[in-house]
Length: 473
Image (tube, rainbow, N blue to C red; front, top):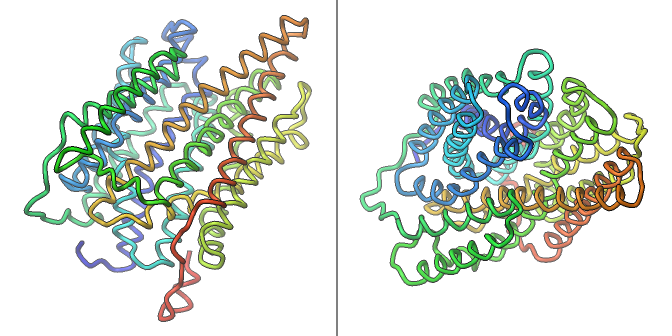
């Protein structure tokens, strides 16, 4: 990688984070706008879920392939191509005249989003080799990854409440254009490699089909498809163990910290995705908040998460290492979900909502940085794109699985309470409470797994690093 100044590295980081924020936002920004989209485009209740599912399917299915393409073709090239695809698809979504075209646009958004997300982390790791700088850079990126859900709900509520649902997609256009022009100027050129290897086409087809089948089975509650996905995954593993240039070298999964980080990521994402989704529903359907009010209610989470990600997490990592902040952050997230599991039908924002919002922001802001550092710390530079794709895949799959499972649990509990004679609102809230409790258990289990099994390398600040640079945000 071409030598870059400190200023140019941080400019490149901000551009990468802005591009990835645009992608992360679209996993949650539509939640508050779904009723308006349904009314305008005539979605049925069952088909409406595909506004979210089409994005999750292509995003989750193509992350690993996109990461490998970054290693073979160049991360910068793949990042720029992903930004173009995502921006063009956002225009199509914002101007979609029918339900079917909106779903197609969302699927293309997922393809572009996979390309951007799969290589952004790899580019950041390449930009920052110093442990102190890398910890601070990961804090910024961690806020984007973890805080994007809260910001998405906030922005979705504001744009839908003040304007219309079209703007939750069209707002991506000026951002995407700006990111593309800025990335061309500040991202380092891809290194020239004489032998980049070949893409394992059959392996790519098998793993992409396995991931997409599993996501489809989860989001559509067709659980038999998980068996099909398992067969495809087994075929993929068998192929990767037998070819010279595999899409995913299986030795990657012999790295303890990589594997443990994926398990932690799956459990945590399951809790986080469900928290954002269910908290928005609780505010809307139980407390009667409008779209704009829901968006504004998420401001405390966004603010606290930003402060902890940008000003606290890196300092904790450099002082105490990776495991203590990880355990503390995930434990705070678990407490947040546990508090929401007792929120009543006549809940008060200051008493029943705000404490959970603040704790979730603090927990996510502190914990995400250590998870990323642990996952990427054992990986060779030439496979950082692949590792980045694996990290993102674990979070996306964990989020999709967690959301589907917890929503199913919530629905089953609501039905059971209604059949027992509970009032509709009481039954609905009872379902939310059980789902929040299960999410709290998932976050707590993630804390235990990370605390017990991670063996991260020490994060030591070099002695020659000037004091003023060490304190810079």
